[in-house]
Amino acid sequence: MLINFWYAAAYSEAVTADKPLKVKMLGQHFALYRDSKGVARCVSDICIHRSASLAGGKIKGDCIECPYHGWQFNGDGACTKIPSLGIDGKPPARAKIDAYPVEERYGLVHVFLGDLPAEERPPIMEIPEWDQEGWRCIHLEYDWKTNWERSVEAGLDPAHAEFVHTGMKFAGSDEEYIIPELTVERTEWGAQQSFDIKTIAARGDLEHVKPEAAQVTAFASFHGPTCTETRLTLAPGQIVIQYMFETPIDEFHIKKHLVSARTVNLDPGFDKPTNQMNLFVAEEDRVIIEEVDPAIYPESNTKELLVPADKQIAIYREMIAEWEARGWRIDTRQVAADRGRIGYAIPCPARRTQANWTLDSTPMLPGKE
Image (tube, rainbow, N blue to C red; front, side, top):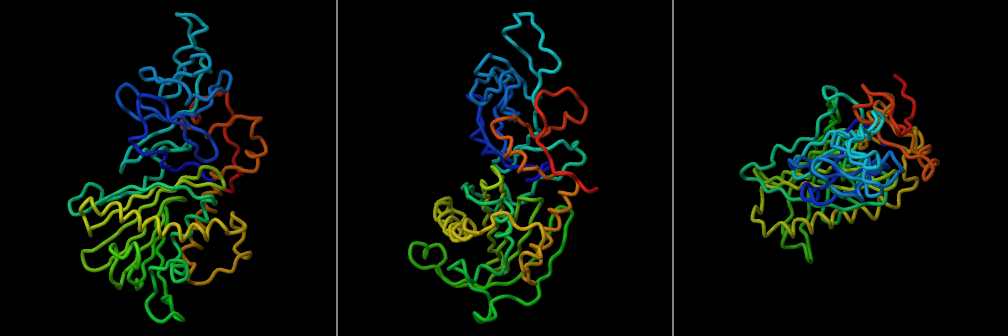
C-alpha cells in the first residue's frame, strides 16, 4: 500500500458532528468527524495517552474527545485539554496526534494519507460531469476480499470481458475477440487507453436496462495507485462513465467507492436498475479476482506472462514501482508482525516540520531514489 495519495474515506453524509466515524485505510484506523463549522476532519484513531480509540469518543466543538480520560484533540491534531491536569492545566507540546488534509468532492470525503506538502501532492481524480446539466451521477459502495493492485488491474483489462462478463463481447469472432493494437498513453499520474467492443443485449432481470446490442467505444484510465475511469460511448451523446475510488482497508481487503455518471436514462427512477447492473458486472469480476492466488502480484513480471493486451497493466506496475522507489510503500510485513504490540500512524504533513511525536510513523520500505 502506498502513502502520499488521496483516498476516499467515506460518503460525506456519513461524517457528522454527532459522533466520530471510525474508518480503516492502509491498515490503520482513523477517526472522522465534523467540527463546529461543519468542516470534515480526519485524525489518527489512537489516543497518545493510553491508546484508546478516539472514534469511540465524543465531538466537543472543534475537538474529538477520547472516551477513556477525556483528552481533547482539535482537527489539526493538537491536544487542547487534559482534564487530569486541572482547569488551568496546559497540555505538553508532545501531546499531539497525526491529522490529515481533507477535501470533499463528488459526495465523498477524500483524505490525503501522507506527509507531502500541499504543492507536491497528486490531485484527486476529477469528475468533470459532476453537477453538470445532461448528466446523472450516482453512488455505489461495496467491499472485496482481495489485494488492491489486483482489484485495480481488473478495471484496466480489456481482454477479460469476453470471458468474465456475460453482457459483453468484443468486435469480431470469438477467436478474434481483441483488437491487435492497443494504444496506451502515459500521463503524469497514470495512463489511458481506448478500444472498441461490442456488447450483447441483456436478458432476464436486466433486460429492461440494456435491451439491445450495441457497438461501444471504451476508454480506460488509472489515476494514482487506486483510482480508475471507464468510459463507454454507446452511441453519439450516449455515454456511461464509471469513476472508481478504491481504498485499501488493508493488504487483503478493499473498499470500492463508485461514482457512476450517465447521459442516458436521466430520470432518478433508473438509478436503482443502473446500480443493479453495476453490481451484476462487479460480482462477475469479484468471483474471479477474490480467487486469484497469490493475491499480491509477483515483484517481477517474469513470474507472470504478460502479453500486448496487458500493456496498460504493465505501465501500471511500472508506476507503482516508481512510487515505491520514492519510499512511499508501507512495509506491510513489518506492520503485520507488530500488530497488537506497536501502534503506528501514517505520517501526516506536520511530521515534516515538527519533531517529538509519541507514535512511530508506519514503517516504510526503503526508497531507491
